[in-house]
Image 1 (tube, rainbow, N blue to C red):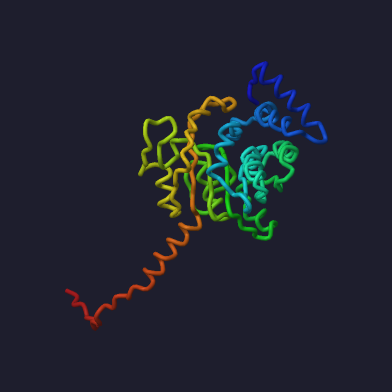
Image 2: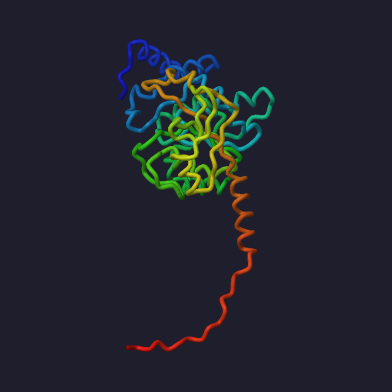
Length: 281
């Protein structure tokens, strides 16, 4: 468990008291999202469970979109990413259909209080074939996630990816479930450098490039959110991230067209040559 400061412990206790109510106001939900500490009663560091800062989650919703569509939130925590997706679309009366997947039962319990509009699934993300089957094989328009980062212990692998970075296993799974996706990843795993940098720079080597080589899915930058503004807003860590966007459906279609052209090429025919008897000396 994390070692909370006195101020953090006090705020977390207040958030727990709010969660005991039958119904929560929007102000109370906001307080819980910002002050309920993921490490107060859980070893969140070992699991890589660090909840998205409030401001970053709000900006993330710009890139994620999903209004009026089907959205799946993988490694959802208590649902802050989905919360902002819901409320950004709410004013246009075009709320997405939200599904949140989280392995920690307590996080799911809290998430159901904060975002009852979502369908909550308490399950391991690596068991995606099982819970997707229970959902009737449902496909989603958008996948979002702030997954654990780096070489965190995991229970499985993505469909194709076998590397060390947990975040790319989640992105690989998301590609099986959705047409496009938006993800929070550490800057060292991104295919570009923007946050906290003097200028935008594309990175053609590293984990994202290796993931693209293995899967065919290319990481793109989003609307231009500089996440370095929020690097000190994480609880118990400080990190610069990037918002990574993927167009899974477009990449699949592009690779399908390439394969069709390859299949249409004539197969070269080698000239016939009769077999010759080798002379043994």
